[in-house]
Length: 217
Image (cartoon, rainbow, N blue to C red; front, side, top):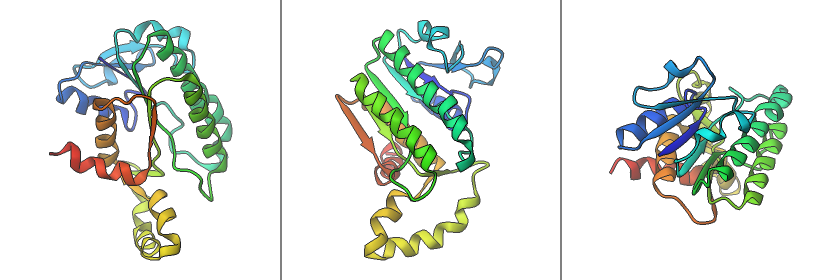
């Protein structure tokens, strides 16, 4: 059983579908009234993602929890939302995971450090620190920007990224802060779910990109 928070979101809906197609049982957390937005075959769990007391009883018997709740389309002026949603939901998921004796926690963070989006990175760093302190076995994925439906504008930056990757002095940062395709991100999440770790590991953009080919073999 895989438990997914944010199961009807930008990544969640596609991930749930992929996991179901690969034979996993999946339970998705959604707000009351949004059960019909989940892919067919996904078990619905309802609650407030910011308040573990409303849904932690629905996690067992899951062995893996994938946390995908976050502020849509992050921007520098959304600092209050980052703290109210991103931080609060991660803390709630850790509470629920510990209560349910989850064996593996999967978290989508953000590439860091970076020259922009300081408030977003700060909150995600706090979330990572809280997850580390929990001692849960965890895989942390750190994409910078995920290209996909409704998120195509960064395609115009590809020539710039190619140039920066070709220059030794900027190559490492260009790759770490590079663009990740939606399909690559889903493939990486599937790989994380199917390959639970002991301890905690971090996948940067380079590792995330490599997972697409692995999943399709």
